[in-house]
Image 1 (cartoon, rainbow over the protein chains, first blue to last red):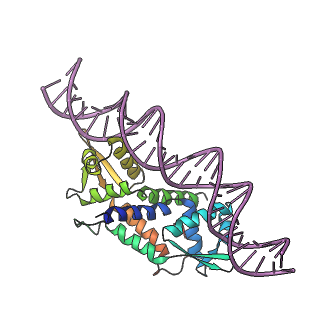
Image 2 (image 1 turned 180 degrees about the vertical axis):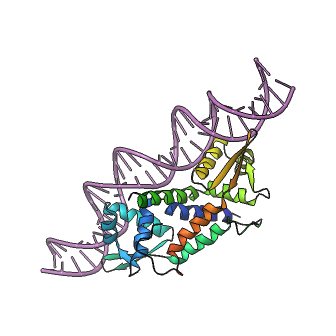
Length: 108
Length: 108
DNA sequence: CTTTCAAATCGAAAAATCTCGATGTAGAAT
DNA sequence: ATTCTACATCGAGATTTTTCGATTTGAAAG
């Protein structure tokens, strides 16, 4: 079964997507919006980075399934996908102290 | 206050440490040990990678505070630090659907 | 003391990531 | 149709990461 290895790589990609401070700032910024999301230009203003850089990081987060994007006219709306990070929290519980026994077949 | 930025970078480093499938395999392997940990040579055998490669990844995980190491004679014992990942789970809850409102000063 | 064994560290090549300016694209506005 | 605006994508240079073989360290054994 290749599935186990594939799942490992996908999990690693998910974590790696969070492994950059700029991308964490994007998440914090988007989650803090009362509207639940923002347009690229707003993120650019907030992060003070080149627009191409911001677009790149947004793409990384979207590819990891952490952000969802939706075209609004010529603007692009980005927002956090809550379920994806909830999954990640469950994955982490595998190593939690309150979950002492690890089943044999567990794959992160 | 530089603290906010520093915390961001530390959080990013923590996630980045998990952002590699080999390191996830290390975590799974160590957590699955009945004794709660393993020696480097055992991890090397399991991962089928060069010893120097395994040592490198172990160091990354230790530097991130995810693993703890302890010398046992000429062997080195490695085990998962549960509390560290529990912290990470709490961080993630910031973006959880069940936590709709994000306070202004929240730093991941 | 020398040898042996486990593990850390070093050095370097290959690969991936990050960043930006420049260019492309698609919808809006004139 | 042309221009403008928002964003995506491209290309490239700089930095970081990954991986391994080789060497070093440090403890145990002979």
